[in-house]
Length: 137
Image (cartoon, rainbow, N blue to C red; front, side, top):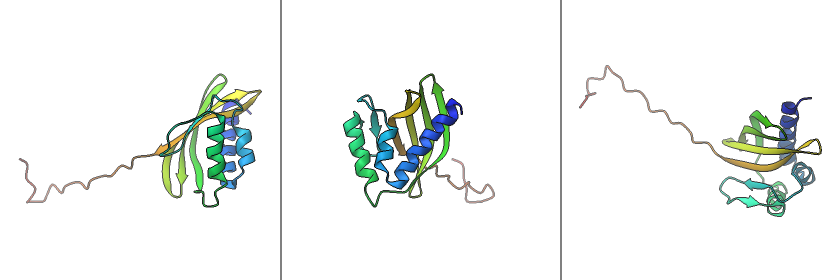
């Protein structure tokens, strides 16, 4: 495997742990230090392992947690740091997400997660140029 496929695989494992409600697997994916952070949609920033993992424990162990799938993952790697940008589909709504990883002892470990809603583009219907009531002022 190469760096790109390895980091995408780590990202896939993150979403699989979420979907399964597997907090132990989620815990193994995150770096084991206090230089981690997370911003859940609508939440203030969480900094440090305790705050971040407490939030994930509460989310993944909640039986009514949302269903999340990851679409269109794109990896950006710079040495031992990398991130995966993707679209999270959360109960049918789209969020833009960034999952930042650091290579630690040969494995990609999460150090930051952030997701936020994507603004929807609403297109206005085009005016009918043949409409006689249409006027330019």
